Structures are given as C-alpha cells and as structure tokens.
Image (cartoon, rainbow, N blue to C red; front, side, top):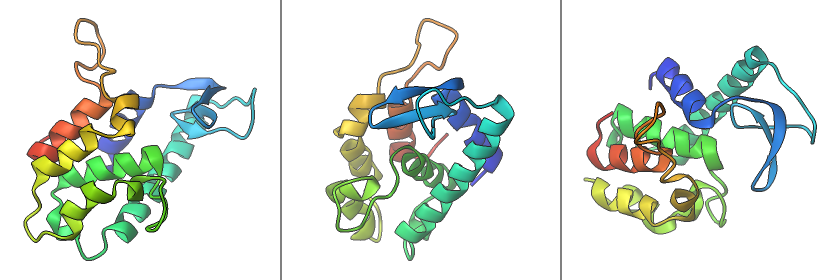
Length: 161
C-alpha cells in the first residue's frame, strides 16, 4: 500500500469542507471524517492529520478482516478495499453494516484460492454503496473522469490503477 497515494485519492474523493455538514447518518467535516457536532469546524492541516488517523484505522481493519487472505490482493486491490473500509467501516462479521454486509461479494474472496475478481467487482457494483457514490465523476469538466465507485469497481476487476 502506498500511503501518500491513498491520502491523495481520499482527499480528491472526499473534498475538503471546513464546516460540518450532514452526510447520511452523521455530521462530517474535513476530508470525509466524522465531526463532533453540528457547526464544528476544522482547518485543512488538522483535517489532514485526522484523515491520516482514519486511514491508519482502515488499514488495521483491512488486516483484521482479511487475515490469512492477504496474498490474494495485489497493491491496487488492497488499496481499493482499504478505501471501502475508510468509507463504510468493516462492521461486524455477523452484522449487516460496513464491508462485512457484502456477504456474497466477500465469499468470492474468502472461499476461493483464485479469486474471481470480476465477480467481486460486480457484487460491489450492485450495492447500495455504489448507488450512493458510483457515478459522481465529471467527464466533461476539470474533475475526475469517473466517480469513486466506478473507479474502485474497475480497479478491483482489473487489479490496475
């Protein structure tokens, strides 16, 4: 995993907001991190420090979740799954939240020696997460040409950045 690349990707995907805003279930600020309350503010420098801490937690979550399966991931796919964990958390293995809620998709990784990555990508593409973040690209403007979901699905499928 390349931490600098991951930080830059997350900063680009999340964008920076100094003042807390409501995002689905919580107040969020900085680069997509949980804010303590409505009206909370954060500097760009402090937001970068918070983002790095959240990224470190996502890496720990990845290592716990995929213990014994790490060799199935190349660097690109590892970074994709760390981004997913950053975005939604791991959840609990027996729960219906976070990445663990992708039971059918994850079974392709956990149950196969040779992972059918195209099937894993299709599972991600069919999810609520993808519908929420998928097609947020800017094909005619200065922003990224594809949305976060589209990019992650493509990278999981191909294993290429």
